[in-house]
Amino acid sequence: MGPDELPDRGSAAGWAARLAQVESRNVTFLGSIPPFWTHASGGAVRDAANRDYLDFSGAFGVALAGHRHGLVVDRIREQAGRLVHGMGDIHPPAIKVEFLEALAALLPWRSSGTILGLSGSDAVEAALKTAQLATGRSGVIAFEGSYHGLTLGALAATDREHFRRPFTARLADHVRFVPFPASQSEAEAVLTRVSELLARNAPVPVGAVIVEPIQGRAGVRIPPTGFLAELGRRTRAGGALLVADEIFTGMGRTGYLFACDHDGVVPDLICLGKALGGGMPLSACCGPPSVMDAWPPSTGEAIHTSTFLGHPLSCAGGLAFLAVLEADDLAGRARRLGEQALGYLTTELEGCDRVVDVRGRGLMLGVELRKREDAAPGAEVAARALGRGLIVLAAGQDGEVVELTPPATLTRKELEKGLKTLVSSIRSAS
Ligand SMILES: Cc1ncc(COP(=O)(O)O)c(C=O)c1O
Image: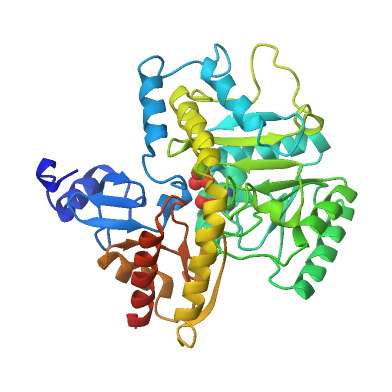
C-alpha cells in the first residue's frame, strides 16, 4: 500500500476528539493520544497519520501468524461470499464442524469436546462452569497476579485490584488465591498450600485449580520446571480439575503448541483464545469426554450458549490459522526467534541498571525494569518505543515489565530492528 493510495484520514488528535464524543470514557486511554490503526500486514501496522510501526505486541498476542495472513484473509473472504452468520447451536454452520474437527486433532486427548466462544473470558467462564458440573464443587483456586478476563466469573478468578475493586460486592467468594511461584522453594510452599485448600471444605469445596502456565499480563512470570506437573497431580488427588488458561500462551506462542507441554502435563481443561482465530474473535474451552460429558445432552435448549457461538467468519479465520500453524511451523519459529531475541536482549541489557531481569519462552518475552514510585517504567519505555516506531506493551502489577509477544512470522531482520529499537528505548528512559 503506497501512502498515495490512502485517503486523508486526519490527525490522531482529530480521531481522539471524535472518539471522546461517542465512546464510554473508561475504554480508551486518551491522556496521550494513541495511534489510530488503519492498516496492518505481517508485523507492520500503519496509523491514520500514515506512520508505520513494527508490532511487537502482536496486538495483545493475537497476531501470532502476523496481521492479515494471506491464507486467513482468503478463507474469510471465501466464507463471507457464502455465509456470514449462522445459528450456532440450533442450525449450526457447517464450517463450525470443520473447525472443531481441525482443533480436536491438535488437542492432547484421544477424543474431546469443545465449547466455542468469542473472547478469552468466554472460554474461562465455560471452563469454570464445566469444572463445577464435573466435580459438583464450586470452589476455585487461582494464583496471585492472575488474569483470566473481566466477565464476572472470570473476574472472580482474576487477581488485580484495579479490575476487582469497583465490583467486589458482585464477585462470588468462592475463589482462593495462592502465590505464583518463581523458584523451586516457593513452589514447594505453594503446592502444600494448594493441598491444604483442596482438603478443606470451606468456604466451599474446590472443583477447579486455574492457572496460566506462564503468567502473561502479570509480567511474563515463568514457574519453575516441574511445578505445573506436580500441581496437576495434587489437584487430581484433591478431587479437583486442573484448568490451564492457555489463552495467551497456547497455539505455539511459547515454542510448543501448549505451554503445558514444557512440563509434560496434560490438564483436564484447556482454555484457548487470542491467536486461535487468526485475528477473528474465537475462543475455546476444551476437554476430554470424561470431563466435558458432565454437561447433559441438549434437550433443545443449551444451558450455555450465545448468539454468535461458532460464528462462520471466526471459524474460517480459525481454520486458516490452524493450517498456517502447521504449514509455517509457527511453534518452531517462535522457539527459534525467541531464543535469538532472549540471547540478544540478555547480552545487550547486561549491566543496564534499569533492568532487573530479562526472561521468556518462545515469543513471550519480558524485560523487567526497576520499579519507581512516580511512574510505571514499562509504560514509559513503551511510549518511547512507540515514538520510534515500535509497538510494545507494559505488563506487571505496577507496569514494571515490557512485554514482547510479536508475530512468529517476523523475518530475522524485522526482529533485529525491533529489538535494537527496544534496547535504545530502555537505555534512554529516565
Ligand atoms: C491468560 C488470559 N486469560 C484470559 C484473558 C481474557 O481474554 P479476553 O480479553 O479475550 O476476554 C486474557 C487476556 O489478556 C489472558 O491473557
